[in-house]
Structure formats: C-alpha cells, structure tokens
Length: 276
Ligand SMILES: [Zn+2]
Image 1: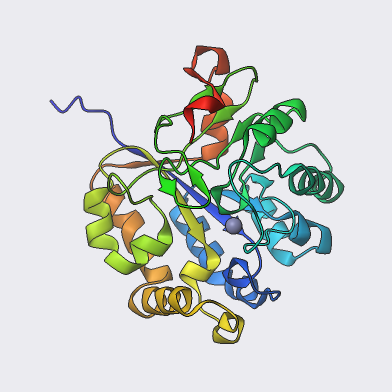
Image 2: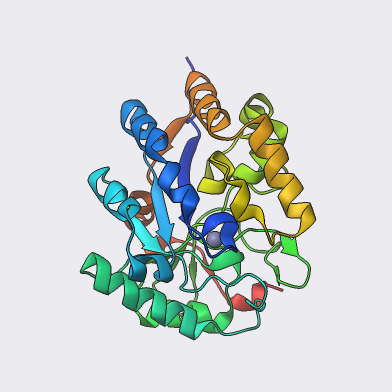
C-alpha cells in the first residue's frame, strides 16, 4: 500500500501592470480562457493584487471574487527599478496597498506578497502590526543586490515577535524557485518531474498571455525570456503542468486557506537576523 503523503501544490498569481513594469494593463483583458479553465478544472488559486490596480479598479477583481479566489495585497506601486532591498523599509508601499484593498474589497486583507519578493525587518513588523495573518513573499534564495533569504526555512514558519505566518515559495531545484517564468522555459514535463515536494508556485498573467506593445521598455534580457517562454509555452504549459501533476497524484490546495489553517504558535519561529 502506498502510504506516502501526496505533494500539495498551491498556485498563486501576482496581478500587476503588464510585465510588472509597464504602465499598461492590456494582458489582464485577455485572461477569460484562464478563468474558464480554472472553473472547469476546479483548481484552487490565491491572487495578490497591487494597490494601484485595486484603486483604479478592473474587471479582473470581480472575476477573482466570482471564482471564489481569495485576494491578498501585492504592494502598491510595484516600481521595479527603485524598490530597494531587504534592508529598506517599504512602509508606504504596504500601507497604501492595505488602504486601497480595504476601500475596494470592503474588509481588511489577511495576506501580503511583496513586489519582487523584497521584504525587510521593518516590513515584517509592520505587516504584523497591521494585523495581516500571513506573508507569501520569501524566495528562499539569494538575489544579489536585493535579498539573501537562502538561510530561511523552505516550509511555513512564524516571524518571531509577530503572529505573522510566512508561506515561502517552492523550489524547482536547490536554486531555482517554482515560478512560471522558469517553468515556461523548461516546459511542463520537466517541471512536473522537478516538483517532488509540496510547493507554492508563482504565476504572472504575462507568463501565460503575451502583449508585445507592453514589452516596450523592458530590458532586452527580460524581453527575450518572456518571448521565448510565451512562444514555447505560456498558458498551455500551465494547463499541462496541472494535469501532469494530478496524474502523478499531486493535490492542489489554496494557499490562503492553508495559511489560515496553520497554528502560528505551533510553527518554528524565525528571527529576521537569519536572513542576509
Ligand atoms: Zn509582482
């Protein structure tokens, strides 16, 4: 008898302007097939939406709500060039994001994901003070010039001195996070083989759908990566990944539901000193 616990995959999507750095939102107008698939396949999802998009409003917010997809905050401006590092405070980004959320959604948010995965000690303290229940920002790797979270646990933990639960991203290899940008490049069969442990997977709509005019202004390397990923894979790659993982016995869970079900006090407690 097979007594092995099935791996649990939580899909998450970060909802921001096209390619995370353009001032356009054209890609968000093309996502109807994604929502059809989500409902048909009954795949749980958690979305993190920028405060800027919550403030300006967009039909996609209603689509998430009618699909029963929990929404968390994904910062406010999400400006990639000057977002700082793990030693910078992003209080303004967090506070404005939370305010825009309350105004649009009508209640306080429980989940947060930092733009670019960059959180600092001050940010964690602020999230705890603001009553957020969980954070899903940590890529447990080193990103030179931005952060070094390589020494942090790769499974859920509680930030010391707070009630804030951290839900770290999953990993494809020891150094490559489980992000759709990478999965697009290696393809669904390889990604399904690499995902051998429970994981939080990171998706952006620009990994699934392409809009070339929005690519203007992207650094050449990024443009090539997104074009190559979209040409080779994109949305069909995600569909194939989910079906391959399901065939292999994986279970799909909802990140927010899982985070809220955890007993924060029973989790290992981690001081921010362990980062960096
Ligand atoms: Zn983002």
